[in-house]
Image 1 (cartoon, helix red, strand yellow):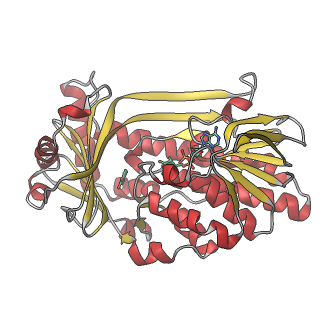
Image 2: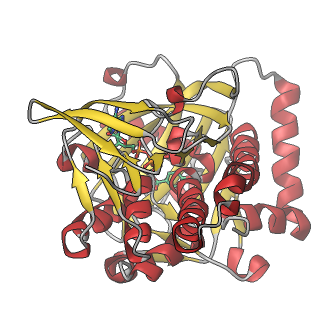
Image 3: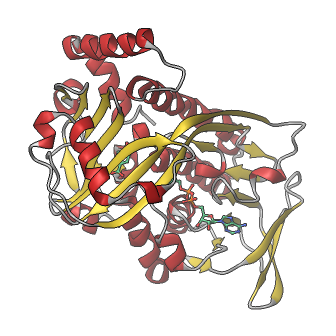
Length: 389
Ligand code: APR
Ligand code: PHB
């Protein structure tokens, strides 16, 4: 098979890129290792920045998001005693959309057939070849037969564990990583949220987050040691801990219910540079990971995809390679800003094992400064809604 762009990975980044390229008449094909159900089974966050919403609007795939999503014009920080509201609408004139990123992936997936986006699922042993030149190709096994796709560009949207990043020689690449000494224990329950907005709490006992999927489905998290055994956490123990960490005002409104999903996810900050090598470009988790504190994961993938689709469309429509040449520099500029915000909010809102009374006092003082400073709240707000693309 020959195409113009071969996309590896049918998660949100790969599907979003595929739809954007198709919409511009750029030939592309997506190859995915798993089945559609497996891809939809991935636990994902629930906050969309404007860049993500606007790309779905441009594709005309925003109907369900607009019908079921929850526009939020603020969120809250909590210090165990009070809520500090960050009024993003008043401070920076923008809002975020609370909508399950799994649902966004489903919307992209369900549109493939009608939009003519070819996705090959259950593609095994995907391998990249000749990415240094201008005639790269991908091989894989599908239904027991060896297959090959020749393309002008390959875009790795294959997540943190995919093969694309590894096709870039270590002699020209650099990795930046911080692994956090805690994970997030998350619970999904069909109960109404305790607050109409999100609450990120830093309590003496640790971090908690109150989020939601709809007016009848809530998503909560607490941080736990990275090696925690989830069997140690009954639903009741988790509801008790959430009530303590979120503070009395939120606790009074918590509705308990059985977990329909409960899992522990590790936290990591990671950046791989460059995000392009020869005819291979990287988008999304294939190139970077952020701790979920800033809800940046999918939204950073969306800005990568925006830059990549603009660059590739320009190349194929005008034979101008400038966008492709600048892709890594352009994408990384926004990646580093999201990494900084996610790392900063993680440091502010979590107890680290080596923290003593002084570090705790500094967190409390910073939260108090935020509570009383419009300038600090504005800085947090402009990062939370997403810096300009
Ligand atoms: N061959 C083909 N496909 C592969 C391979 C492979 N060898 N390895 C991984 N994949 C597929 C995975 O099965 C997955 O469907 O690539 C896809 C990568 O998708 P994600 O991991 O969701 O990454 P991305 O699309 O970049 O999403 C970024 O979305 O919801 C958020 O938190 C999530 O930060 C993440 C963000
Ligand atoms: C979620 O709803 O799952 C969620 C929301 C905000 C975050 C992380 C996760 O920062």
